[in-house]
Length: 307
Image (cartoon, rainbow, N blue to C red; front, side, top):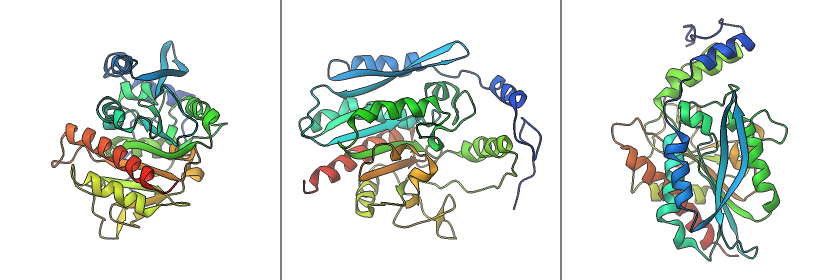
């Protein structure tokens, strides 16, 4: 079934131009603060990790420095792992989970792996609780060198000097009810296409790389997270968000073809977490804890593999 209800911006059947983009921007109010919620926690971690400013965004006079935290004594002889959060700024537990991992669990991996963590890739989106950036671009479909997302190209530039060292990249996300009520309708309106309603899965799931799914790795993460929150079941078609389930709580996307964040390192082990914060069976703290559990399970699995 196709929903023909018009999104508040634009004309059904016609892709947005500059006027519609300006109208959409006018609807995006700052609802929380990157400099209050995120930056102080990054600063407090400076005694344990090297802070790396890897870019600066300036959107209509609003500037955001992009920060990552790195193992201070980076050892090229050790494997490296990239953890990213807030690629979609509205997905709160991705940001908070990445920070909580650094604050509470990262020390346990010292001397075993080099860590590079970018906890809030899209600060403008974080403040507006939005999936897109200032240009109505989805960063997680534009991770390519010539892409239109400055959030994505800045992160690519950050990891490029260390390509070949990464064995793991875990990207922390959420699937929310607002995907169906706001962001998918907005996408259809932006592109001049009809909105096709879908279902929001109730629970945690993972998105593996269709080209290298590493299902045992994905399953190890699912098992660890089930101690914190429940796994999303498939729908009656055996799918989650329109994709066939290939393992318990696991679906696949072609990461590189879709321009997704986990494609940027070439790591053999990659995954995208998807927490469900709107479930009546999960609290915000459980969502944050689930992200931390996922990162630790991913690291534990990779570090247990033969060198």
